[in-house]
Length: 224
Image: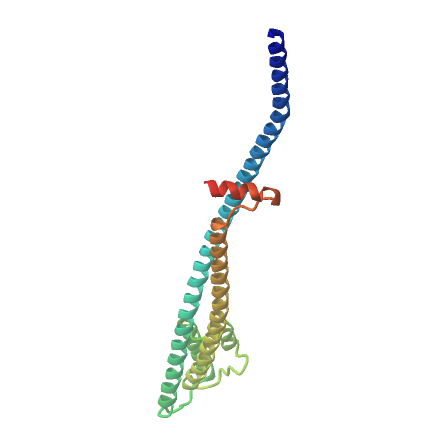
């Protein structure tokens, strides 16, 4: 009877060892897969965080650019207003000279004196910003219809007309610069909005993981 008990005990022990031998590899493999899945999920989270950090840096750069473009547009807008006021002042100055010239007697003035008057008047107008560098050079060299033989009063009228053209050209350029600055400002603002939206999406998105991990990730997220 005792021998029978021993035999059954040995058989049960062997069966138990066999069962453990079968189960242990499966448990070990399952645990290994779980650890690998957790490692991949952590790597995916790190990658998502890194991407969001890169977008955040890009947002800062885009914001700086947008602020600079806005400041450039505002400056260009102010320049348009400034050049328009200069145009009006030039027109008013020309109108005053025309009225005054109607009552001036164009007495005889020697040609050398007239040439010196033209040089003096043109240089003064250039210092005021009423003549461009090119216009001053033309006046001093008597090119492009700048006639040194005109009476000083007529010189003033010619210079006043040239000033109107000069300020009109400055205003035209200012309008063109304003339009370009407006377009650049819009592009910079749109880029900043896009990057901010991308940053928000990157920070709120769940990590992208392989398909074979998705079930494990979902179970993990549910249990958190």
